[in-house]
Length: 66
Image (tube, rainbow, N blue to C red; front, top):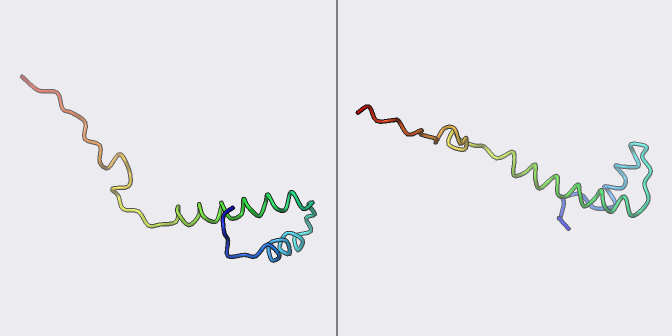
């Protein structure tokens, strides 16, 4: 399971605050998914240079003019 900065109790409170009701198994699955989404968001939000784009480093071979 992925660790999050939000405790399971606080996560359940946020779900309940929205008026949603789920059983314990569903809440456990959502809490685990929340941790995975947070980890993914942290990776995606890193600044990237133009070199991160494959097109910026692709150099097609030019045919010879002989």
